[in-house]
Image (tube, rainbow over all chains, first blue to last red):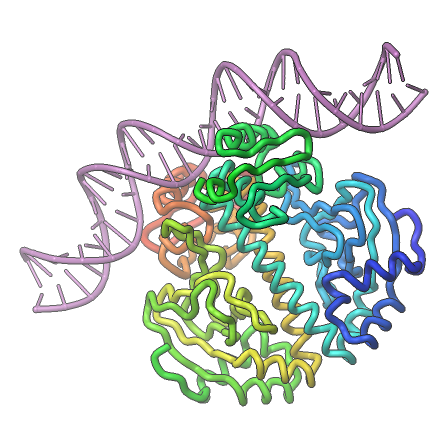
Length: 227
Length: 227
DNA sequence: AGTCCGACTTGATTTCGATCAATCAAAACA
DNA sequence: TGTTTTGATTGATCGAAATCAAGTCGGACT
């Protein structure tokens, strides 16, 4: 992390709307603000590495953090992709554990970090924080289960179709929207090689999906659902 | 669940050693014991179904609970397998959520259940409970990440080899041990069809692994690690 | 003992997606 | 503005595992 600083007005604003802080009472928010440090990461910089002692809790303010695990021979498997407002779940280890995966900035990102021991101290005094952490983690566990099942049950075009439907701003009607990040990132998130994502998109063309750059147009959401 | 009852001496003993209760202070243990209800499930019985309102927290006392997600057309994908002492993580939703998956007894099992609202009340008063839940969930999230990465990075024989190594009672030396459950369950846990598990075992024979029924003999753990 | 049933194995086939390789497009940069 | 680098597409090939289909084993039961 390049340089650390106290959160300014903009960062405080973003933090207040983050998944974790937005559900806390004012006093807990204040306590967390107190211990927050903000830092920005250039693209590709690591935030932490698998196996390192976990001493910080992180929250994404802007950008995307890719969390992946490494193979002995260097291949990577993405396990989660965190965006603005997300708590980085793999790093919530309140008792001297180690990071379970590596976190890398997928693009220039702004991150808030909290010393885990101090978080623990606050959680000991203020149950709303502890309960908010439980909620965040159980939501993340659900998402992980969903990915696991999705991987095992659906083909690449199906997974892509489900992703598009889940990210459609409106329901039922034809829509256009912009992918929030590079396709290669999306491929990793869906557990696919970039080539497979590309092929999935071109197969979905015959089902009313048009892609130009990051712009996606969905002609018939109902048809997509039935893929 | 057939019939519910207050925990008896045996059940209290098992609960005390469970992952969740074993890290709590005496008063929190007492509070949790107070609200515990014990029930036993015959094999194949559902504990809860995906999508149902989540109002109970569960802990496995004996047996195994298979947690899986369903496809629209009925195919199942196992996402986790919980054994004695495990907290069923997918059901830790402290605020009116829904179960993210279905839980089914893989064999006759004894389960402790706790009313989620009451758990929440206790967690509000006693931070050690909330923190224990956070720890349990972050451990489960790590496991989910590990499965996800394992699926994507390793072949069936590799996954089986890694499972065997992780469950070897001793390190480094040749060993024999018994699989804790049916092979079809293990296959599901590893994200494989039963046939693929069978073939993986027969391919591992040439690397010093012998299997007869549930009995596994590992001739050379080091060789396994290098598969 | 024999019989039945579920769990497991084995074989043949097919499908899916990874991988390798070659373009192609499009930003980023000087 | 061209030049360079990075990301995306397309094609061809290969390998891993799902699936379908028999067959085998083993334990429970009468």
